[in-house]
Length: 321
Image: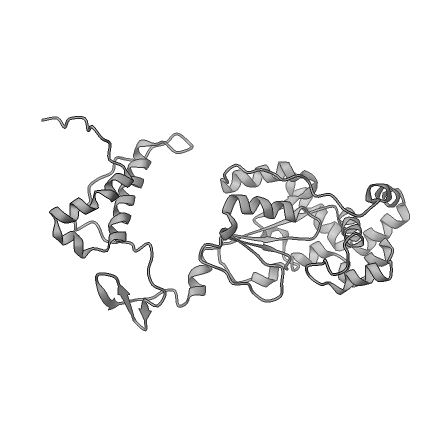
């Protein structure tokens, strides 16, 4: 006899709501934690979604099959107390203490597999705009901003670590995380940072960089600024001298929109809005910039002081093409 068309199509939420009636008719269901029951319903929903709805390539998976008690070998607690593990036992709600074989020894061991992206922000390479995009894609709880010495507190929901640090800082941590860095024409990047610091009042530098104080108080020229060892080859230093091929993605600031589109496709990101371009706030920047760019002697000096950055940038351009 054919099954008649259902008047109301059951969905995830209606079935969760109906669990109360299920427990009345089948009292043994009261022995199962409610969130475990919710997870079972969610598994059924996902199985039918994969069958009824095609993926982005137009492909559908096979029809879901009923799993008898001999084939259903796992269940999930979506939430559990942090102190549930004691030595070699775990306390499961509605079940009690059972023996545990633990493969992850600490919260760090667990969280390190959750981070998907390590994003290195070199000053004046569109890193702030990129951070805003990461926040849109992963949400505020999904992005940890690291701009200080030491290691920040990384919560369970963090998927991205982004900030001003060198690649080596997280070497050996977060296996599988994709390393991403943006580069820029080294001479133009250096000039942009110089004028940014010139226009930034003392005390407003979030990193309290002592070199910023030198630029302001001693009114350093662009060449004097570039001659400071700490200002040379910042992009090369950010890579920690690692091969450029070690990075999952290297974006070029001059091709920001185009490269960002490629990254969005590679990571299958949702749509996002690109904030307005950051502009240098130093008064007269637009007038002084052409003066420096037209002085070949200054440009040659800046280039010679940042030879490693130029080689890195040129290599990234070749790989891009």
